[in-house]
Every structure is written in C-alpha cells, then in structure tokens.
Image (cartoon, helix red, strand yellow):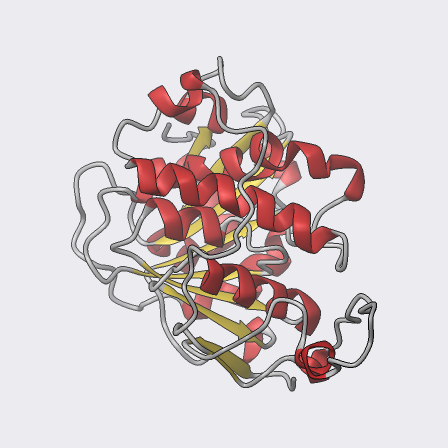
Length: 295
C-alpha cells in the first residue's frame, strides 16, 4: 500500500489476509503477518458487517449510558464491538498499548466520545478529518456516535490504516473513509480536524490549519465554530499557554465535565481552536484573548 492510497469501504477485505485464505491444504494456519503490501486497494461492503464480530465482555456501565441518552441500542452495540475488535487486532498489530488493552472502552473509546457531545448537533454532511488516527481514535467512536457527519481517517502508517479500514467495514460504518497518507498531502478541506496526543500543538496546527474551510459554516447552537478539536491531557488554565506552545484555545472542555466525572476520572480535555483564532496566529491569539478560555 503506497502513501496516498485510500481504502474505499466497499470491497472484500478478509480480517486474516488473502494469502492465508488460499492455503487450504495446511491443517494448521499460521497467524497472518500484516504488511502494507497485503492491504487491498478496495474493501467490500458486501460482507455482512454483523457477522463474526466479537462483543467485548466488559461493556459500558449504566452510568455511562445514562450520559448519552441520544445514542441508540445499535450504536452502543457497535461501540462495544469496536472495543472487542481493537482487542482482537492488538494481538497482531500494536494498535494501543498492550498493557492497556483490557481497558479499551474506559481509557480509549469513552474519552473519545466526549467530542461527540460537541458534534452531535452538527449539520448533515459536516466533514471531519481525524489526523494520526492510529487505532481509529477518536475517529471510529465519533463515526458511530455522529452518523450524520462524514469522517476521513488519515494516518501515515499503512499497517494501522489497514486495521482501521477492516474495523470500519466490520462495524458497517457508511460515513467513514480511511486513507494512508501524510496529512501534508491531503487536498480536501474540512469543517473540523480532530487529533489525540498526536504531536506538539504548534506542529499539529502547522499541519492542519490550511486543511480547514476558509469560510466557516453557519454557527449552530451547541456546536463549536469550525476548527480543531484536539484531545490532550494535563492542560490547565495556569499552564496551557506553555503546554500548547503559545496557542490559546478558543475553548477548553474537560472530558469529565462533558460526560460526567462519575464515568470518567481522567485529566484529558477537548481543546477547541476556531478557524478565526488559528488565522490570527499564536502571539495575536494569546494577546487578544487575554488567557480567557470558553468552557
């Protein structure tokens, strides 16, 4: 798989690889080695997305579900299946830390769902690019929670792109496109760009600020202005200017406040940088806002 290739989620990608499927004479199949060259150009949606998908044994708590009354039983089932698929793939490809794989729902899926509280009322057809998606975070949980939004999941590591494409197909997600490329090579424009601890904030902003629509969409009640939505831990009002390399967020939303401290006790926040503030640059942004952060 070459950089810039896109996995169209409508072809037949076996979860264990083509080479292994052809060898019917062996009594014991070897575990498939995942390589970039094994990734097919297209993935078919012809496969039943509900077939042979494991369901995570540790589901979401009743308290967590109560914080998302807008989600349907089908969406909750997909979120729990996402956790199981991450665990399944993590045995072959290091998608997340193997020390943390048993906590995939509480430590990975649930915090990413915090952004859905900001996008649940986004307009139909809103476009979001998830940069450095890795194991599909936060892009896949968001695609499940916000079916009206179109997601482009981008990563420069081909193995992880193949994994994410397979999970999207098996979950039956029709609003996801997965692309193996460097973000600098992306030509499309988006309403929002998401990321989760990808790199230092000044570098991330440099990568993505020109990928946002020049003319922001009309504001909607309950939806932030177009821009960056970035998950980062350890950011406080007192240290954020230093932590973020001079970039002051338009809004900082602690995930514990978005989804409830009783279901998430971590220190991560969603940082929002509007298109307007990004255009002003870090110095003008910090001086103009005077350090104030909208919650």
